[in-house]
Image 1: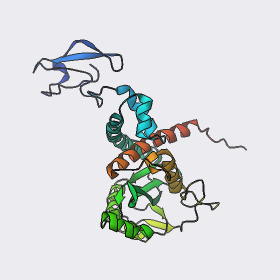
Image 2 (image 1 turned 90 degrees about the vertical axis):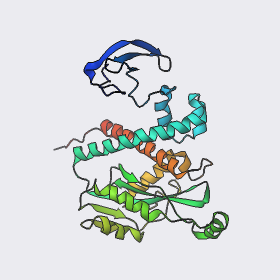
Image 3 (image 1 turned 90 degrees about the horizontal axis):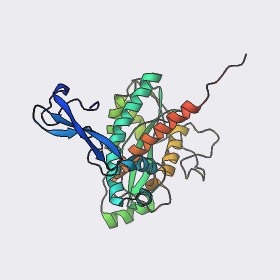
Image 4 (image 1 turned 120 degrees about the horizontal axis):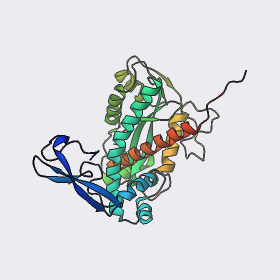
Length: 304
């Protein structure tokens, strides 16, 4: 009864709860404590108030979470863990809800441990939904050098270049939600970053105005994007020193780890909301990997 603090029906305190035997849960081979409330007579268990309540395949959660951030498509994941692909689609949404909560706690823990964030790199990742004629933009902010994501948004934009006329003919006029998405992202950043933070950005014309609007006391440095190298598929640059390496490396990594963002893939995004859920799960796994790398890294010793 350690995990139960109140009755889920009448909200009676723990003093009104008594043990009422056990039952065997076949899903994960655990014995679960049954509990009875003396106030309302309701019977429940320690599993009632947990996030996995009424899930039939709890054992697959961690595997699905890791696979979604390891360049595996939903059909391959379903075959690996032995479930229907619809189960993987449902767990994607469920895992994303948990990941968003965890990501906020991890970011706050980093700020508490290392102090205010001084430098941020900001840029947009381009992708599409269903077809190249329906492009999407993902405004993305990361902490300089450590590559910890601060936040992102997913927004639709009109097709550009040679696909613009084709897109209008097939799907009609497409709205541009990029400015609204960046505004919402910067509103969130206002609660995280100090007023005098420094932004590193590329030559996008909207970025300086955005920074001035939400961070009047902040500074920014503009670094014009260089030619992309083959390995990073345009995200990593050919230049020897890239001032925006943290955000460009994050983009290259996310394209390699999130299957629907690969440059050459048939696992395209059908709904922008699911892309946002997938990125939230990726950030959750990425932060765990970065934390593991920091713990493995040996401390530097000074030599006299």
